[in-house]
Image (cartoon, rainbow, N blue to C red):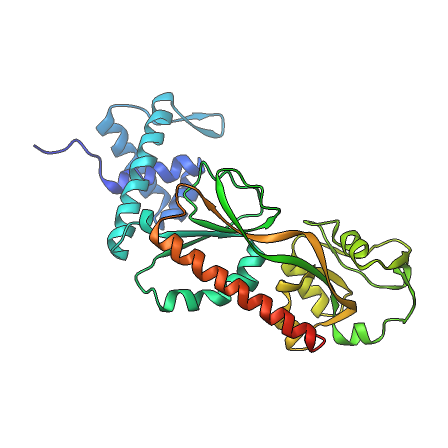
Amino acid sequence: MRRFVPSLTALLAFESAARHMNFTKAAEDLAVTQSGISRQISNLESLLGAKLFERVGSRLVLTEVAKSYLNEITSGLNQIEQASVNCVRGQSLEAALMICAHPTLASRWLTPRLQDFLKDRPETILDFVTTAKDINFTETRIDAAILRGRGTWTATRSQELFREELVVVGAPHVVDTLPSEDVLDFDNIATLQNASRPDLWLTWLRGAGLQHRGAIRGPRFPHSELLISAAKSGLGLAVVPLLYVETELQNKELALAFGGPVPTADSYWLVQPEQRAEIPAAHQFSLWIKDQARQFRRDVSHMRSTNL
């Protein structure tokens, strides 16, 4: 018996037009003409015997029946897409190992090390996501996350990897010209600020125990990646976690100002939902990341012994 199923072309045209609420944008989305979109939707309306779009002044709006139809069609198209991706990959994305981390931590510390994990596990499909927000581990399929905090995530197994340590860094030519004074005078020091962590300078000052005067001003950047770039270009001094700039310090692209690393009250943790921690791939990742953390701690210790 033949299925009562509209053409995929018509369904894609309807979904795109409903998503954009604009036939022209739908045409651009699907690389067809606007008349092609109109024709496909007209054919779909004829097949269904229902009006899907109406004009209210200059606006395009969905009819009530179209709203309900859109929800179900979108779900169906997503399932078709997922099944197709799984077929191409030869494995369901549900079987992938999902790893989560803060974007800067992911790009500067975790991803450069992942080749070591994957080379011995070619069968592992890695699904990498980033977050700058708290995670509800009871409502996610994340297998493992590397997070900064104090180990207080609920319904998880949390294992400390290493303490967070802050450093003040700047371009070498900027650091070399800093005045040598017992009291830091921020009115005469070019500083850079991290808008996502506005307390970094104060946290470092408390930990370093240095006296200071003047206001901490200077350009504000939305995240650490831009902050580090600005410091490398010579715009001023920045407070950043040491693990974000280990490469730049070793390559002499950045230099330390005002002494060595200062620990904060936070650490970086391996966090795994209780219900997923014993999945074989997640367990293997747990062992591997703890080994990487031990190596990182040794590297930092060596950097200290050679004055970073």
